[in-house]
Length: 436
Ligand SMILES: Cc1cc2nc3c(=O)[nH]c(=O)nc-3n(C[C@H](O)[C@H](O)[C@H](O)COP(=O)(O)O)c2cc1C
Image (cartoon, rainbow, N blue to C red; front, side):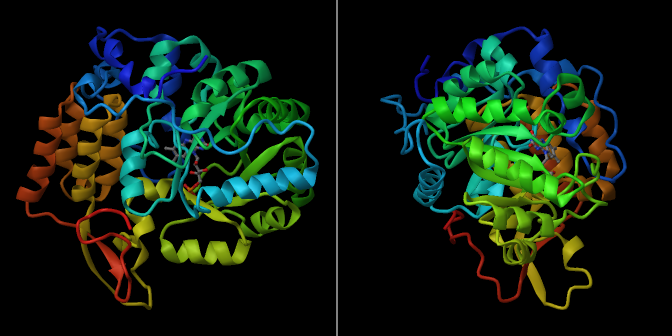
């Protein structure tokens, strides 16, 4: 079944009007971002009491400027990779990647956090491609409300990877067919290490069932018009990782993102990603390979690309705090002790948050996602004025007026924490604020 372009966004109106009743399967699944938090920072304060309000959309999608609805975006080059030799498949994988402009700076998939408004903010500040949050393939095929609230996109939201978790090839294909007109890759999540993935038998727990993984990849590669990509974690033993990666390539994977931590290495802030394993995978494969782990500023990007030879990098946790990372901005954390000189970049997280809120007004998302970004982007600000965070937590029903007011309150308190740029940095943002 083919949906109209942007039909996901335009079909949200019924969800926006729906009474605040829990859509059990969808909301319990969607509310998994905490499961992904790998930070060693003190836990965030408990959610406000009536958090069901947070599952409502932040604005009426009918109010936004409608995108032209004439004709689906052109399908990417290529057709199912039946009967192609390994060499031709790799060639096609590279041609597709080149056709997308070989993006190197990529927003990683993040449940509840790499949603459309956040992707658009990161794209404005230098991101060259982005992943959606992980979508649950079975719920995606079964539940219209889940589809329309958890997957939205627009024509500027490209190149785009749409990520699914799955353990049934037929269901995965059915889900993938619904999104293929709107994306450049359908991605399989093979890296989620959390309990919810163990219970659901997906993500990194499929590393115990490689024949199933192979059948998932093959199913998509043989039947979709867009290429299939995978995101994996590494095995403790390098040889196992390399065999795994080769198997994925042979099964039809056209691009592989490697998170250089094992399934048991969940604390991303404490445990460094193993870039040498990523380098070995890159050397062993013929398709594009992306590196993930420990990308906190542009110096990390350069060293990672150099050390691993990877074709691009994914950033997750740091990007949440600093969505302008790929434009060369960094938080004070990374310049303390640095030998290079830095200067105030005349941009800060409160400004970025206001820009994010404006994207949310245009591209509606559930309030819980906005709440999560408020905490991430303003975390350092809230440490200085915890009463403002308490106010946010006490507010069970969010509004834009309240959120803009909160940012103003921080400013009125005289607080400003700048983002910094290197003195010689040429910032990749034009004077009028658009991406260059
Ligand atoms: C809030 C959050 C949500 C995440 N959700 C997903 C997800 O949906 N799919 C996925 O493959 N990885 C997910 N991850 C893992 C990241 O994509 C990434 O692999 C990991 O955080 C390591 O990158 P980093 O060192 O830049 O944080 C998530 C991470 C965070 C912090």
